[in-house]
Length: 393
Image (cartoon, rainbow, N blue to C red; front, side, top):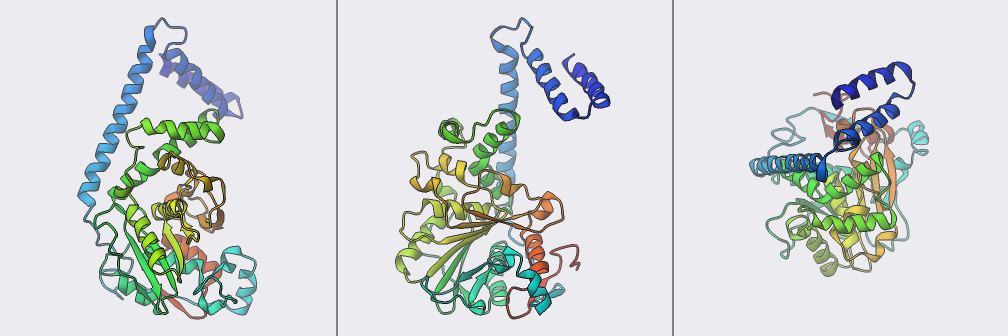
């Protein structure tokens, strides 16, 4: 009865009004109120209880499915952007910009951003001895490579860099995979965290950002419960949800321990954190959790925010949460993952004309940056085919 009434009223609304979405939502709300007890003699909210049980049961089925897929795909690590072997795919040359193109690129913030290499107190930021957004994006893309191919990719993109051995204090088994790249002068280290690749990574996403996503969903359909005192209270009450009391040692504690180890044993280096999607979000959480005086700067690509996630992960509170982190988040156009939670720090838009899933790809993001800014170095850069429809294999 409620369903038929809802359909008929919406057909009438769509044919007689210009704002059908708003009126349709009002009708849906009234129909739900009537169906679940409004003007009906239903004792103790029985239908509400049944509906809640159905929703919770569906969530449990979804999580169980994710766990099964995660166990099945945990060892699936064979895909490579370079193909079965290095050079098996066609290459596209990304050249440095011509003087005319450089004048246009000088008006785009993403082309102008540079990060120093070497000691933090370097007096001059040299173009040829600095890191660009493309450099961090390429390092983040190498984290998706099989373990035996990362070194080959590093030698291809960054011949003057090498892979840093894993610190001995880091856990052997962990949900997160990360790679440390160090310049040959041992003056700069970039710790890159892998994003979502397997079903286990999807389960990791759900574990860390389920509560922030639910809070944002309520903001769209009702009052704002994510900001201010409401947000703090809801985040802390979310500890009652089974997924919320997260054991950090099973999620991203290995990255945190690795950063602490490097900062303690090699204090004279300049450190950066980077990552794409889930990896970028974890990099920002690690930076937020560090208690050291000097923290590494984080460059994240298409990564979710961390304001509400931090309140869930650290219920005791973090004093620096209200301040801006030394973080730059690159948000591709049409990407939805970077809209989850609230971003802390600085954000920068990147061009993308595709759909949401396509624009979330780190390779599509890098291709858009290359088309506007060139290789962002004084040399040509060779990338494999398939990163964009404009670069077919």
